[in-house]
Each structure stands twice: as C-alpha cells, then as structure tokens.
Amino acid sequence: MDRFNINSQIEHLQSKYVGTGHADTIKHEWLTNQQRDSLASIVGHNSLISYISVAENECKARVKANMLEKMLQPCGPPPVKEEQ
Image 1: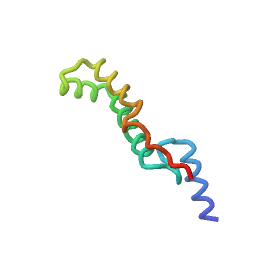
Image 2: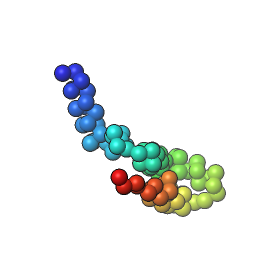
Image 3: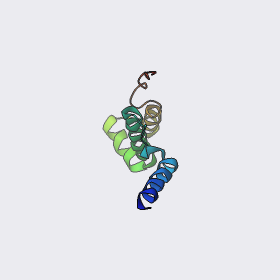
Image 4: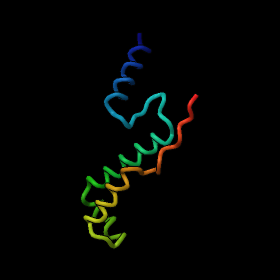
C-alpha cells in the first residue's frame, strides 16, 4: 500500500506542476522547463531586473522584453523525434 500511495502522490505532483516532469520527459523538455522557471523568477523580481539592466546597460523594459522573448525557446528548437 505504501508504494501505491507514493506513486499516486508523484502522479498528482506531476499533473499539478509541469516542471516536475514524468517518466517520458526528455532532457530538452526538462532543461526548457528549468530555463523558463528561472527567467520567470527573474522577470517577477524587480530588483533582479534592475541589477541586470545596470549590468547590461539597458533599460528595465528592454531587459524584461528580452527575458520574455527568451522564454519562447530558451534551449533552442526541440530535437527531431524518432519514430519507431
């Protein structure tokens, strides 16, 4: 019973939070989720945006726009899937 309980908890977390992955998650998907989470965290914290804007000598709006644009494909295009 304990195994069933742990597996159901893991399945619940995986359905609730996309970034936790599942058994069929490939490396590219996992890295993409990590990058998007990091970028979203940076965009959400105004002090980090200020720090990056000073370091890059850009205005805050440009830095935020660049971060949001990177979220589309943070790790490049997905790999071609092999059909079996």
